[in-house]
Length: 87
Image (cartoon, rainbow, N blue to C red; front, side, top):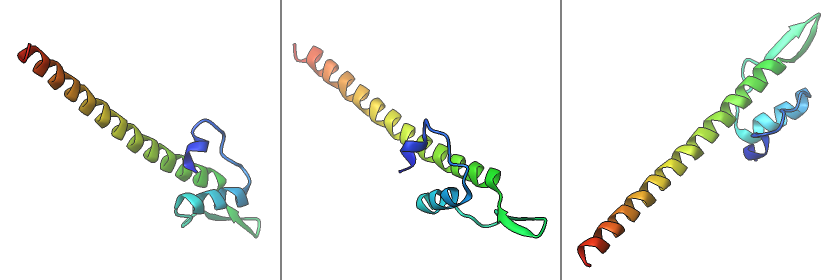
């Protein structure tokens, strides 16, 4: 679900942001604000938390890709070395 927001803008509607935050498991604690007697949601804070979560997930995915690339490079080097030894 989080991958579809890598290249898209986040929603600005409070309800859509709350739904997205709940889907991603982002905490909503401390995002309520009161202006002129009306209680609402701090949209900027929610978007920041959601973007931080998406960035965290993306960084973890990239770390795994780098690890797999390194392991495949190591396997390729070992295979080439064994091919030279058994020639």
